[in-house]
Image 1: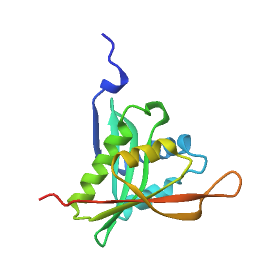
Image 2: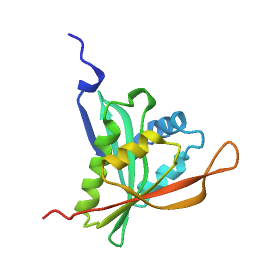
Image 3: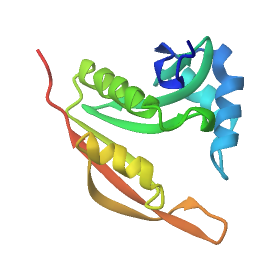
Length: 158
């Protein structure tokens, strides 16, 4: 019997320096204007909450969360293009929300391209709402693209 891709077991763990080559590869295949390897390395060195989604012993996604002063900021959340639409982005988002709550965060923020409809749907499904726009935030092929700033209030679980 053949197992569907969605039924393959996954594990979410802390990202390590050994993951950076694969993280950078996924980033380059996912975005026209990707983060550099050095940016990911700096996130690890800065102590950000960096996660890796592993499926079948292969890195299939990652997320980066910054936490400070009772707030958190999702800096990056990405699933390998080969494994999208399987719920992995949702699983990583839930893990980042859990880690933010565990750090006593009361509100979490992120920026997203308004043209990224799949991401907007995911964030809306998890209770994020638009609080602002950042004009000309993202590099684009023709000039710059605005960012939608989304937020979610977190209930601290006892």
